[in-house]
Length: 617
Image 1 (tube, rainbow, N blue to C red):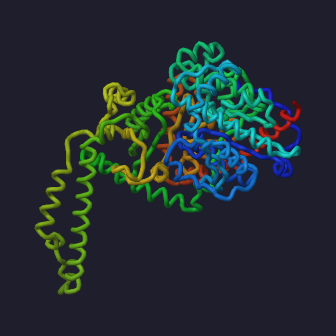
Image 2 (cartoon, rainbow, N blue to C red):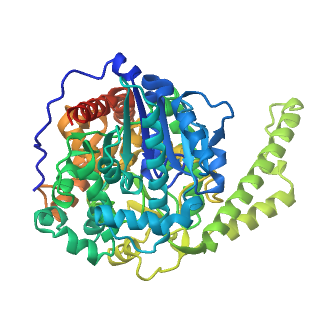
Image 3 (cartoon, one colour):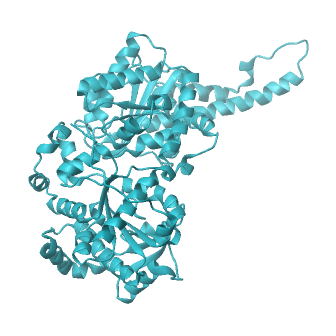
């Protein structure tokens, strides 16, 4: 059903250095200096490229809603330039605003406004939104914050526009509905600002995709207003539609989402602006192979603690696969991944493949505590390690002394070099270590263990980490962090230690996880229903040679897609070490195609087009 052919607008010329010098660019987003989700990653990774192009003519606008914002923000006392002067004027008018630097690579200008500071005017702000634009808003805390944030953003842009010279352009680039409430009012008052609006995923589309397995086939037939009422998001969807229709240039992040916008927002995007990464953040020059081995050893330690008390397998013949993201069972492709893993397990058993796969599901689910057995195994293994190190030290020292005094080539008995204390301690530790229980599938005690979709599938498929299973499962319902007692490493380090990322999403407007995976030199599987996968299919020749595998979920049924995924996994399993090393090299090299320095050209087109359309009014 998905058709990526769009009517592309004609753009005169290009965004030259002269135009940039005459342009003030603001990017407005709820996630500017406010880490909530994926848009934070988009903005933060893009900042160095934007600062390189626009310098001090670039400024972000975000909400001052958390006390911890001060860890990423530094207020400046010397207020030079139009952004700073408009911020100072807002303060003189009594508004609670903070102007300074966002402490990320590039250190861009940023204005943070406190939406709570105008809550006493919320009734007036809401009435204006209803009377002028027929958008009625409920008394919801997030919506209240968003509307107040938009009200203050509009005032700042009005003040900024009042300071511009006749030859200057001002571009206001809004990201997502939570930043977009000023757009219809900016158009009504004809403020001299060129407006670009980017939706990274339509709000209604996300809700519908989670609840409709035939979402893409049903897209042309949805009544957006009825569906919005059904999910109780009518106000949010109306704000999003008003922003899409009110902007001079409307963009989205992928051709997949462009189709969604056409039917759910009623406007076809002008330009697709794919998401990139700051490749320097991921580059470790020629060290990524060493880092892979270093962090693979850390995963080995986790796996030994998790499995080896029950049974062992050869770690040199073990591959680590992973998937991660929000717990959206269908949207993130967890169900498809599980089905493919069950088939892979059967295929490997049938052909007696002498390898083991450990598949990690890294996501977020409510839990009571870490499984006590998992913690105990971790603790006993650490005790075993310390005991072995003590014995090693004692034997080494005594062996050296004995060797120095050897007469007649009489070799000492190594067993005589260990004290009875350490013999007993070693024996007791081993006895407490070994168990006849199967290794647990999930590392934590879930709040809703009985109805968890991942566990329900594994139980029904009898994939519960039997010794003869070629595919083992570790379901970790908490994100990996150095403070996590089971890991003690960063998520970035964990992924570098893995062999393959598996992300066959059903609904993913872009998809940073496979992109970040290949940037770390880890091959990845995605689907053509993700924005990233669709971009790969249409822009990168022979992607599999570069370590990027794409499942066709548009033409295939669920079971066909599951078999295609299982086949690709099986093909990867059968590769030898040299082939996997080559694929790691090619994956890391391919990631440069997604550097913001390459992809910012799409934003340049959007900005130039918005200036031209504003000028034509």
